[in-house]
Length: 300
Image 1: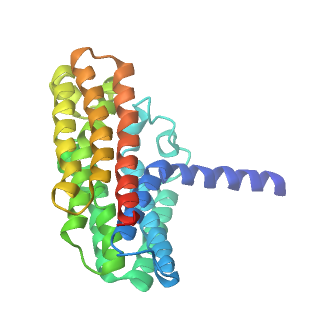
Image 2 (image 1 turned 90 degrees about the vertical axis):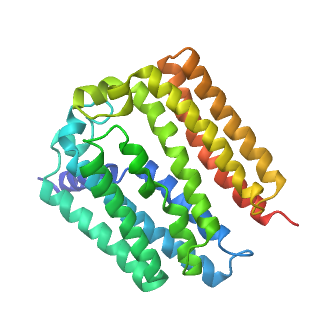
């Protein structure tokens, strides 16, 4: 093979590894962790604190990417049966298991080393706990066994702002756990809206997601009830005196639109409505955390 051919082959192979890290999902994880870091500080970060924020985000990004790679490796047979994931390199057999495992270990080790050396031990242990929660507890234990997998396993996905808080303060306060609660309650309606749209994929793969085990109507009602609960939870930062009325207005607006989408899903289900609800959930979470940050720095 010519040097140009070897370069193209290596470039293609690394692009396959990059896909396995689920970069869009990891970007949201790092975004929430970064917001947690900024909210943990009373004012604008100093130069040294910006350095710690950058290193903490890098370490969390590497470990979260490792968890995503582990998920793709363990679920390659399931992914091969689902239209949404059949294109993944592990599902297509484009990469050897040994290669994927090596990349996974390198990512996890590098991220852990950065968190240990340049951040603090609490952040390292919490990040590794989130890794185990997602990669092992959710992927291996819960997902193939119970329709409540995303509820029970959602704790690991709700950890990013807690990790960010720990990175800057060396401890975790009540406000950090409130950020955790927002993501924890947000996760089921976000994921079930997508599962409604992809129900045949999950049925074909034998994964007991809620729409498969309990049907479309039951799941749609569950999505709506969770969005109502989410509206209450998103209002708690103001109700508990942690954020101002400005944040509350944004939170009620974003959560109210989420509730409307979910209510429409209950009244007249369609795949288009399910995807609209799913997409709004992404805007909702990003908007809530952006509003928290804006209110944090708003002049008193």
